[in-house]
Amino acid sequence: MHEVVIPAAGVALPGSVLAPVEPLGIVVFAHGSGSSRSSPRNARVADALNQAGLATLLFDLLTDDEARDRANVFDIPLLAERLAAATSWVEAHPDLRVLPIGYFGASTGGAAALWAAAEHGRVGAVVSRGGRPDLAAPRLADVRAPTLLIVGGRDEVVLELNRDALESLTCEAQLAVVEGATHLFEEPGALEEVSRLACGWFAQHLA
Image (cartoon, rainbow, N blue to C red; front, side, top):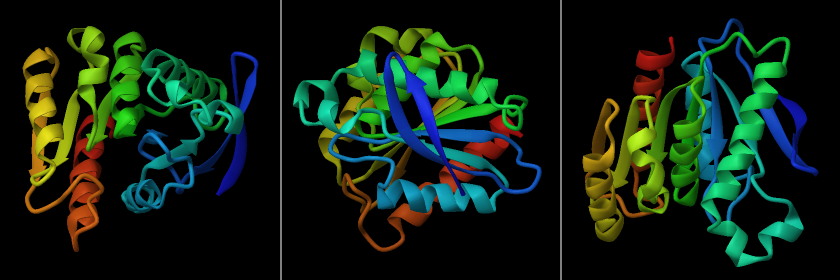
């Protein structure tokens, strides 16, 4: 694992990259509200992706000072700009720039991933875990990257929001429901199912 710094509009965002030998692509993570690059759930998904032959970049979307302002946590255009900055960093990296790029977003990070994917043609696939695609509603029709929406079966409000978003997406898109899972996928086997679905989606569309 390599610790890195992502420059983004006057701020420096810490992150970490893990790349297996000859990776098939790289997945950039967008964490959810109240979380950071150290999210244990994202770390578990990233580990599964690494084992499947994909590199991963986990980074903080906000500085510590910015994160204290709750308005920033739900500023999806701002979060999407930070994700785009991380994408530009990957594209400039001598060892990573040739790799296909995917986004994995959780909660509000799912909205940021969709918003950024709508603006960045290099993105080859998007996976949203318990995402809030409703917060990216103005840009959903512009997303071209194949998109997988993963939602817990017991996360009823978010599940309905994702069903509505699926109808707004014009790209290849699927909704996968993890039965018995709540918003944080804390139930036994739930996060493993998320990892399995994400690995399959990225392997199909990035490899």
